Image (cartoon, rainbow, N blue to C red):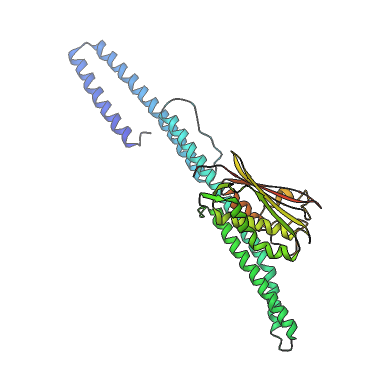
Length: 334
């Protein structure tokens, strides 16, 4: 404590004042007054010493606490409910420590997510790459029949398209995770939105002879991003077309109330196993009814897009009876 410069200066000043006061008391007053003054000065010095010692001990504790935090121990709690500057300082240090601890935990989670994502991407790209390498080797054979050459070339084109879609989708998901995509907040005509989303799946539905219908009022709208929502609906419709048998049915109905705008997409296809339902929006998840070519990213992207627009999506399904997707966009101020 006494090695601190401010304590040395204050002690010196008090000692000088006390010396002057005692000398004056000896000259101007009696011995008894001088003794009394000396006792008072000793008591004041003692109180000052104890008070200063206490404060420096508390500061030393805070220093030790910060040292332990820097060594990785963030479980200590130094808060107290006593009034005073030291208590305020303790509480503020604890708040900063808690914030740093939470940020550290979030960083660890992000690192784990990044590691998992890289692992998933590697796994997803490995299969088409292996297939492409094999077909490239076969195509280099000068004795390969023309029919087989066309078949392998077509397969290469399909695999390249698949990889392009996968990389593009992963890039979009990464941007959404990072919060770098700014979704527009404009009034969207739901009927126009749905007809736009249906266009890319009309040919696959026609090939499979699937019936299709859209039902809803003309004036139904919601506040959101038209293009991104179209992409989300397309991914859901692709899932419905893929898992609905030939001659099956896919229907969309939409409505609006004071709380939200709702879009319901329903098919009468294979359905989803009960154990798979809670995980179908999880990235790279493939249920037991998923096709061999399924990557498990389309519904994850649809989920992220809808959630990012103040929306919600849930699924109800029964094996053999079909699947229904309920999408809700809650009312919000533009």
